[in-house]
Amino acid sequence: AIDIRTLRNTTGYITLDSGYMNTGSCSSEITFLDGEQGILNYRGYGINELAEKCSFVEVAYLLLIGELPTREQLDHFRALLSRFALIHEDMIHFFDHFPPNAPPMAILSTMVNTLHNFYPEMSSDSDEELLIIAARLISKIRTIAAFSYKKSEGHPLIYPRYDLSYCGNFLNMMFDKPVKPYVVQPEVVATVNKLLILHADHEQNCSTSTVRLVGSAGVNVYTSISAGISALWGPLHGGANQAVIEMLEAIHQDNNDFEKYIKKAKDRNDPFRLTGFGHRVYKTFDPRATIIKQACDQTLQALNVDDPLLDIAKELEDIVRNDDYFVSRNLYPNVDFYSGIIYRAMGIPTNMFTVMFAMGRLPGWISHWSEMTYGSDNSRIGRPRQVYTGYKKREFVPIHERN
Ligand code: ACO
Image (cartoon, rainbow, N blue to C red; front, side):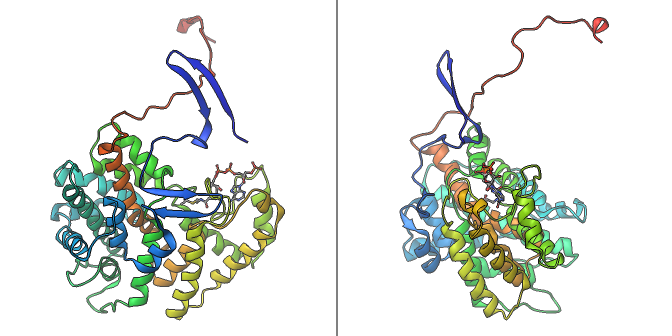
């Protein structure tokens, strides 16, 4: 049920739309989403085709510039990504001062905000300037993510290599060890590419809207993106991929007592929800979930991993799809339901899952920041109104008369 109340105001009407269920905050040319039919297109290209045929870097270029790159343009963007792969040596000392159990999403958002202190603020008025801003962020976030993992393990940092692809480089920085060199497997690289593409944009979701809202105050791009990372961290948003694995593990430890969790999810007095199900916009299958489910089977097979959590996930999905409570509310698996099982199989620790999501979402955030800042529908600070329900006018009571 949508609670829409309209109130007369001096400048017109205020519409109360809690959770912005039906409020368009901007016009955008970046991503088309039809939640009734399960369609997702970036710049007019279907997500299935992009996930099948493109690299993440190619899709990042498409989102940013609006066109698929030629071979030459792609090589240029790749060269920029290589050029900006390192972070300032002084930034590396920051890692020493986080507590050992600091959540990687907190580290990521702090470090991305800090980039502003080390790198110049630029306008993105031309495609080349936008590519430089984007390459700097997309490349450095990968290095920050891998370094924060290495620091948390107490292992020496592995620096980026110039002979590896974007995703291959990330995996190498994560898993290479001086005593045990990591072999980059093409199947794993292909899966990471696919996952990052599927996460690359999703129109005005919570984190992207945050990037736009914060950016609309005129603050720099790093700070706007850092705010988006903080929003993504929430378990109702990107943090769901970590929460799904924790839920599946709990079901596993409870001897696969599905009934208990289904009952809890249906109980309106219990805040528990089946994480990985439901979506604000999709009222049918999330097209990304379909692709990820398939990639999950393929990757586990390629890596020869037999994970009981995959069987639990599939059984849970079956139960949910045949249960009236979930069917009547259009609750289908979302993008986060199967992605964590793939990350686990690759050896990525659970608390890094949402960081992977952030790496994928970066081209979308930057594209929206740029569209908001330089597009034709720009210039106003985001400033929603409210419907005030508090006291009207009260008599002031001096402190000695209060009881
Ligand atoms: N488990 C059980 N019940 C659910 C779930 C769920 N996962 N999701 C929604 N419902 C129920 C609600 O209780 C509500 O029931 P009611 O009508 O009886 O009150 C109804 O379905 C509608 O739910 P809302 O909360 O109004 O839907 P909303 O669009 O606000 O929320 C959301 C969407 C946050 C994704 C929700 O479905 C949810 O919490 N899912 C679990 C968390 C999750 O997986 N988040 C990741 C989303 S994808 C992403 O952000 C990348």
